[in-house]
Amino acid sequence: MRPELTAKELQAYVLSLELGDAEMGAAGASAAIPMAAMLLARQTHAPDLQIAGEMFVNPRPKRLYDSMLDDRALGACEAAETFLELFGHSHRGLDFFFHNGMQVDAYGNINLHHIGGTIDRPRMRGPGAANISYAHTSKRFYICTNVHSPRTFVERVDFVTSPGYLTGPESCRAAGITGGPRLCVTPLAVMDFDPDTLRMRLKSVHPWSSATEVQERTGFDLAMPGTVPETPLPDAATLELLRRVVDPDGLLRAA
Amino acid sequence: MSIGTRREKRVDPSDLGGLIADWLPDGGLLALGGLFKQNRPVALVHEVLKTGRKDLQLVSSPGSGYDADLMIAAGAVAETYLAAVTLEDRMCPAFRGAVEGGRLKAHCVDALSVVGGLLASANGVSFQPVSAWKGSDVVKYNPLVGETTCPFTGAPIYAARAIRPDLALLHAQEGDVYGNIRHLSTMTYADLIIARAAKRVIVSVDRIVSTDDIVARSRETSVPCNYVDAVVHLPHGAHPTGSFPLYSIDEAHIASYADTAEAARKGGAAEQAALDDWLSRHVTAPPSHADYIAAVGGPDRMQALEREAEELSQ
Image 1 (cartoon, one colour):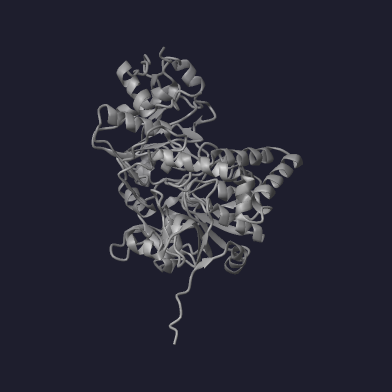
Image 2 (cartoon, rainbow over the protein chains, first blue to last red; image 1 turned 45 degrees about the horizontal axis):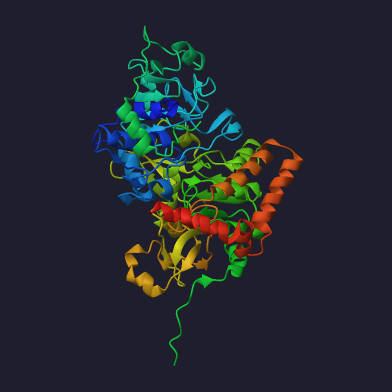
């Protein structure tokens, strides 16, 4: 019996489709879904995908872990870099990177620092972030969240940890930002960004959700196409690869 | 006439308290090596906490978690220069509680400002130029970031202020009695940069190897002895963080701490007393590192973590 496709598996699949052959990118810590996306892309359309930029060069994880930045997951790799090389990667940028956030706003800005209060006296203090430069030096990044709720998706973040499109095209020009978020992939839907306003809009909904539910669980007005398509699903062979080769322990299937 | 002998930098674990007291004043800046749950100098952090040092400033490689939170929970830290503070699958309870309660000044820093600041210090200059950083609020509030202009082109460029720790604590798998350090882990993190930046450096190693062995593989020496002031043999000295490929991460022990500290953050006097008791049993009460290992499961537990690490390479 084949268990149902889970939200995390679908998120990994959607992100894998975005990654091009011969491109180079990486995910940070706590990034099982992005790592699954990169590994799945390698198994399917992008055998020459280069995983590098977060110290482990072309790692070969045998399974997925909640933490994805240590020897358990990535110790088998082609090379290990140090924090010195981080400067070079950070200045040049990668083709793609992934971000998660405590808050994500209508322009794809990411907050991992605080909710409410001030940075010095926050109502809630988050973990902060290690490398914030990839958000604007990389060609593009993807937002991948574990939840889709009005608390997470807010009109304006309380603190810009990693910049998305700030407050729109003019602010990006003023700040010199050329990259930015391409997609935001959540357990309910896929969002992209209006090329004119750079605001988030609904692109597709997962089969277990609806445009109405997505709008209800988003804390800002989400632009919508006339008819909202369903997120494309992996075929049986692709899902089998994801489950057998990338995620044999079923981390993406766990609740 | 004797030509004398080379001075060993190996110290006995019982010497650590005195060295730390000499090298790290109250309010001093302490640097921790490793990353997240790997190669963290946890046994040395225990020694710092046993000295009762207070109002410390803390810096780390850009990813920190368990040991930093332990120091905050013990009330030893006044200010942090930590980029990401997380247990990865959950937040650090003491860090969060202390910042929200106004008991800890958590400076808003990122990887490039911290590593850049350490690099500047390692190279004997007052700042490191950084060309990244746009659009983030982290730069606005970061005390390590300034703006300057390139002396050659006149173009604006950021600067990361030099960070000079009073004391750095590192953990590695191997070292010799003269303080030559060899990481067997895949990554070496920011450990060499931290060692070069700090005024004093203490390294714990899981095993002592001969200097002939170091010489036979000199390219693998990850921190040369000239950057090390003291080396101490503390088997499983990174526990509960991992020291790959020798032993894996003790997630259950980290979870036991995190559950207790999270209850204290949310709860009242009883939960705080439970956390104080946890810290006493696991940090300050065990007289030696061997007693600590006994308190966290002894040889059986250590062997299980060793097996877990070994299975990874199969």
